[in-house]
Image (cartoon, rainbow, N blue to C red):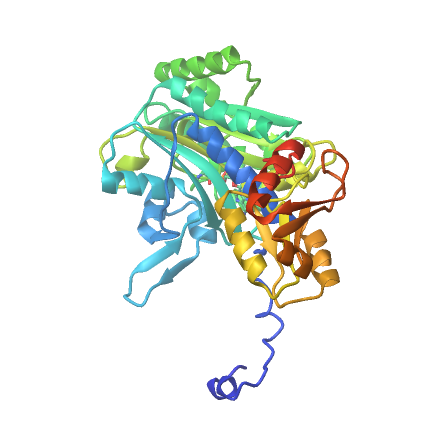
Length: 450
Ligand code: HAM
């Protein structure tokens, strides 16, 4: 145990083994992995901003009632997975298990002009059994649109998800689309399904046997052989859709077809969250195991804003799991070349004159928009060049006593990328920034987006 007194005495006391590691189901993402994440997030931002979506930054936690209202008191996420806690003021809060409910809460609070089109990149917290691709803190990229029931908006949102995955270079991705009906047709269907399943409860898997009365739809989604055999002959949701839901679905499917987006109509696409109405969809990676192949999913939630106390407002959106996208990109042949062709700091300043040359030149380079790094602690030439090499830089700018006396800087190529074939150039201190700009533009020695 670390006591205050041992801290005061400056003793080194090791944390116990568990406390010294990231909590179960969480991870530190750094180095090349975090660079890849950064590239995925910036690709997403560009992609959705081209379609008119603006960034929404919201709180990581909400009054727990936002999620219980949005997802239902009996939903799996609320009952089993939510991180709920009381703060020092006695308020019951919950870490966001997803972002859609928070976005709807923000809409109710701010009443922005609609349609309100937002995107987010956010951690999400769910107390799940950790396994490959399933974490207690994962990260989502998503969009939400509030204020339009037009089925062409469903097409826009699904197309954004599909095109984004394609822009990442992911192949072997399947799109499934379904409809969950609306308050006019779903209740009768759920009743019919409930009585069908109740008469066959014994044949369902142990987990779902007891949940038939609470949420029979969930059984449709169960992957066990027992539940699959039972649901094979269950009443079909597609056959129970009312005329409005069918027309909506027809327009969505026709729109996807017109855009050349292939999809499979899936009658069992019930999704894990209970706020959906009408359109649902999921993108999955064919090469990943079924417990982790869901890259992203979403759908309509036309009753959500009202459930949170706002005016009747339709909505639709999706979220992608960043860790899942990264897993899918790691599959051989799944993605294009890795992003490590290039670096965010193509220049490394090596200073052999006491540090002020490196201090001033890195500042000047960065202000000119050139990524630059340096070593600290007045290390030897060899150590600084080694650090330069490790940083991935293409050019070392070396200032030694001779260069300082001459008013010049030696630009040394670290990767054989100097046009003209020289290994080293001696250029005037006053033109070094312009010279490097030219070299970088000519050799593309800067980080490629993906
Ligand atoms: P979701 O399907 O629960 O939907 O999560 C979206 C994505 O987050 C999943 O497809 C998966 O890639 C990733 N994900 C979920 N849980 C985990 C986990 N434990 N570990 C790693 N990745 C995970 C939603 O959250 C909805 N809010 C999506 C939405 C937006 N619907 C309408 N708008």
